[in-house]
Length: 233
Image 1 (tube, rainbow, N blue to C red):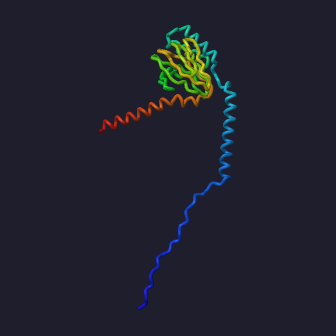
Image 2 (cartoon, rainbow, N blue to C red):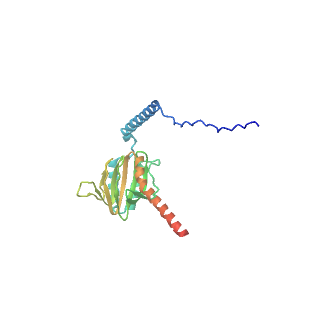
Image 3 (tube, rainbow, N blue to C red):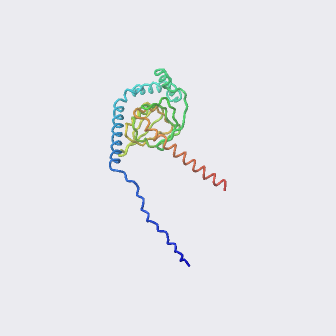
């Protein structure tokens, strides 16, 4: 009988491990070069614009202070009339929709302080608002890319810088100038309202302004979700 050939097991060739392609030094160097050039160009543009910011301002700090004093002199502690006086005169001086006359007051939470604000004007280089509260508030000023001027229309604002042992006191009619890059603790005792004017780079300030609002919104969503789960159970 013919002998049957045994099938030999199939021989498999050993698999060679796959190696991930390595980036050549030239590619990394090219990326770093492009990144460095981009940063240099952006820095040059920011420096140029920063040195010419004065051209974009439409308000004067001295004129705003004079306007605040005249409004207080005319209407005293009638804050509603003071605000209307300021908005009306600014609108007459700057026609064309630069000043918002629609008094839409909204809550503002920033740096732990809470109050309400009415936006008179806002742009990339300036904002002008009425900010205050009828019950008092306290918080962190933040460190900003703009100079901030608080023209106190009613009440008293207190401020504190680390290392000092006495508060800075800003009564009605005074101006609290928070210089660009500086930081303070501030307090508005009881009812206090101010004409707040900021000039410089405004967009970076929005992150500080919206941080507390975002945190509160997130907390409310989480609490709402937990309450919903408990109710379903």
